[in-house]
Length: 300
Ligand SMILES: C[S@@+](CC[C@H](N)C(=O)[O-])C[C@H]1O[C@@H](n2cnc3c(N)ncnc32)[C@H](O)[C@@H]1O
Image (tube, rainbow, N blue to C red):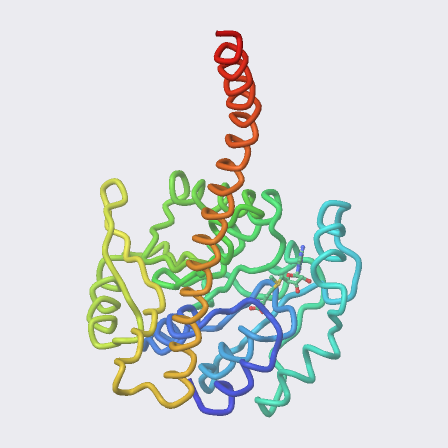
């Protein structure tokens, strides 16, 4: 990733996480030529990075409703709820803060994308627009048409609890439309209608040399699936903690001690309460016994 985009990505709002930024960088650096397409661009967080990898002679197209009305009520509810501050102008400002010129912009629903992008022309498609099954199903078919044989498609939100329609459309394509998954991150599934095996081999070699990404290989029926995530930073060894780190550790220990003492005090108070109650119950019994014994003794 080039330096300007790396800084810009931090200040552009969106949903494009570090592991996926690295994976996009890797997939987009592959030698194969072809155009680039993003369905659902929002304020440009992922588009800005995709634009870094545009080569001479290639076209990058983005498609979004921006502030326009959605094609149906469910889509309208989704967009007004989640993207209320989105405007095309804000997208263009963000994009031009990093790149010299804008991509081709299709301002409208993704259902029209095949009127703008040629069949068999793309090396990379990012599907990140509507989350509704009927739309994603259409986006899957459009991606299959516009991708070249060995092109890569990345699907966002393929497994989130709030996007079951994306999951259904994506796995349906895997089960019935010849889509082969290459790898998954927490948020995206990367796949191809070409042969996934050589891509996975190259990906695994790159991952082995990329310590900030954790990965493993799972079995997915007859095939393999690479799982990738960002490696959590190991805790700094004690010797490397600065003064602040030491103070913070000390405070944590003191807080834990105080909590323990409070819990012990609560137990003691409870025990005293129980004992007092028992004494107050036993007291009258003892009194009566003493009075009875005294009466018996004086009668004799
Ligand atoms: C999750 S956001 C995209 C996030 C962006 N790729 C990023 O990484 O920051 C989804 C976008 O899809 C757009 N969208 C939703 N439904 C759409 C549709 N039917 N056609 C075109 N765009 C749509 C929304 O306007 C929104 O900007």
